[in-house]
Image (cartoon, rainbow over the protein chains, first blue to last red):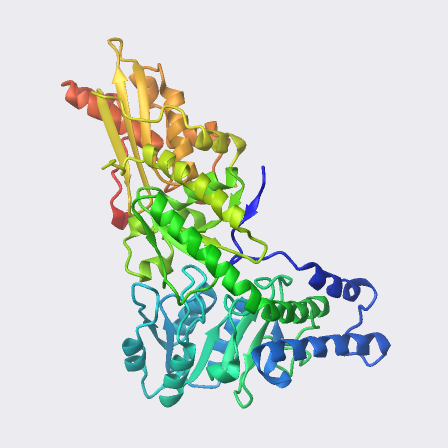
Length: 385
Length: 144
């Protein structure tokens, strides 16, 4: 059986060119970048070259890039690191943030910060008026994700950042899903901080970066030898950082070619699902969305059972159902769009990557409707009408 | 995360459907929680389960436990069927992931409700407590 990977928002395979660039830094060029001997200098050069590559991909300065252990750490460093020097005040985040921001905000809330979770409309776009009205005199930071990991909606980040600045607050965006998929330029966006991750862009797991605009003061969360300009102590993950640098360069350069191809595949899949299966609903924004995200709900069936059935047919997808996520609640993102819990349990996400083909999409559209029909026949909620 | 036996029951579920004119029907769960199981039974003159079918909305564990319980009770006496617990169903499947034990492991409860329904419908209410020692509480959505 042919296996088809449709879960690139979860993670991506490491690009062969990325892996080749990383390998020497495990065994031959294993130096510690803090040492001044030859091996140490080689490692330092490699780390700084990667920093330049990440900076170039984002339109940032090299000194504005901090390497971290991944997207979640970047988000935590942004929120905790930025707010540390203030007395507890007010924080704004959107209702559809990734848990890395959501749970960090809740932890800050427990530490005395007031937090507003700004609602989104039915297509997942942040309610601009509610956002603007949420700012208070003591609002220090607003954090809104660039593109949603579940439903793919892309937020008007430049506008949201400008509003935050007008109100005297700083602005952070979790761009883990956006970087490498759509153009991301920190100068055009006007953000103060931006998180990204290696393994979503055909790079390695366990490495990420935080863009910190010059002049934005952060307090470190990890203390030690003062690495990463004191913001993130710990000997650098040199192979991972090298991999991230190569990966972001390759992914960014490929956007112009990959994006239209994925958008065509995405729209074909969405149309196919909605046409071939009654009582399905497309989630997220029809056009302002990630090129590879196809997210929808199927009534009367539960997401994990669809996911498992597809898996036995070779298709690997994701679901926002409670069971698939390991919690008792369906995806907070799907609920935030205004769907009821019952429908949210039947949510499914396909996230395409550059190696996916039109044949795979057609094959999915042949395999999926009978799976849904089988599960609906088994469902006590389904009355064929 | 699932045993081969769970996957087998999930992929090839046994006794799917609804018995027309069933002697007893039991339903448990709530679509808000993501699991609904309905079990219908036909009972013969000797108080044995002559036929049993299920319909389930839910995850892999919910489908597999429903399928397994129908296999376990087919041909059994009502008393024997009443003794089957959710835990026994999970054990017969070779175990379930810990997070599935609570919300997706209700098939035996649905069966017990079907037996209760049968007893009540056939005027044997007095026997309900005697046969069914562990009747499930019907879950309200707020309990999750």
